[in-house]
Image (cartoon, rainbow, N blue to C red):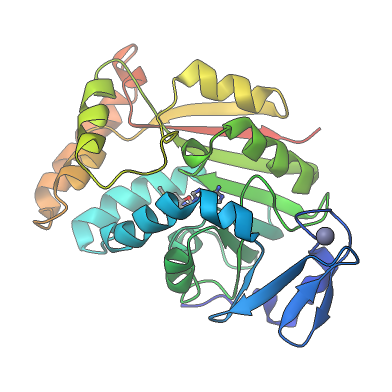
Length: 287
Ligand SMILES: C[S@@+](CC[C@H](N)C(=O)[O-])C[C@H]1O[C@@H](n2cnc3c(N)ncnc32)[C@H](O)[C@@H]1O
Ligand SMILES: [Zn+2]
């Protein structure tokens, strides 16, 4: 079901020009700034990406267009998915940015009472996200079209590793968060065991941008630590995620998935092995 929160909010209050950071004015079907940067309304979505950046992102657009169909909803898949996503969610409520929202599915686990804005570069993903989130914008995570100190919580789920310089994305999250606001990052992890599997999985597939990668834990923590006071970092996703990911064509069996998730619980408590996760969730506060 779609969230209602934003229906009564005037978006202009929180927007700014992503190119020059000046205020935006809405005229007819576009936003523009005093420096003549114009951002049009396209397919029901405001587009804050310049022509020049779009050229640079062409490969990403194509890859994401092909990836929209990967988000399945069968019972076993959702079991594994919820198990991971629930761990991202923080208690703080208010205005929430789903940064790199993809098809907007995180809104399924974000509690009622929050107002969610989704942002992503891919029009194909945003068309999906619009079915779940009331307000979405097309924007780059490195140049968010929002004013400083706007959001209470920013979720950045599996997006940072798509950026040429992930730290540019972290810096923007810092800028748009309010003081004491919470930043949550969930990222792909290059652990010792899965590193080769991950590399092989990408080898023959329609490639993302050349800089697409997986993080070493210390690399991710250091990028986030430069801006936020990290209060938790957790290794997540093991066998359940692997089963879900290797079964793109055949639906997963829910009993087998339950077994894998039970093993995952044990793995997550076992020293050393628990470091071999597919993902890492990091939470920090803006001080
Ligand atoms: C692996 S998907 C994750 C989507 C969603 N957060 C989720 O977990 O279901 C990565 C997303 O990042 C988006 N993306 C890639 N480069 C981006 C950029 N520079 N700025 C914002 N989003 C970007 C892609 O379009 C895609 O939707
Ligand atoms: Zn401008």
